[in-house]
Image 1 (cartoon, rainbow, N blue to C red):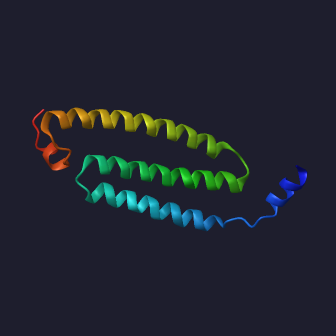
Image 2 (cartoon, rainbow, N blue to C red):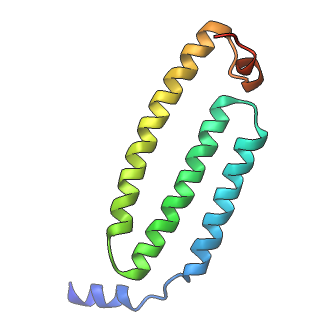
Image 3 (cartoon, rainbow, N blue to C red):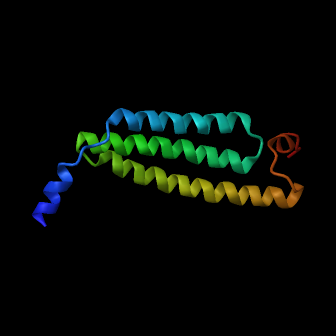
Length: 112
């Protein structure tokens, strides 16, 4: 068992800049999706993509710094994101039943 741990520690690690680049690309894709898409479901998916990009960055910094605070914070972000998705999808299903569309332009013209 001790030999397995030593072998795992001698593996080359991925540079932290790669995580930063990947996280930046994912976050940028999410921002572009929120700004340019008109479907509410796709906008929710892009918000989740942005949250996951931030989570990836937090986990990588936590791993390289040696403390677990970032990973604990990621757990709480995931819990809030799951609640956000549940509420958001419930609202979208309710709106879709009333107007039969999830287009943001149609929703913005509604009179509440």
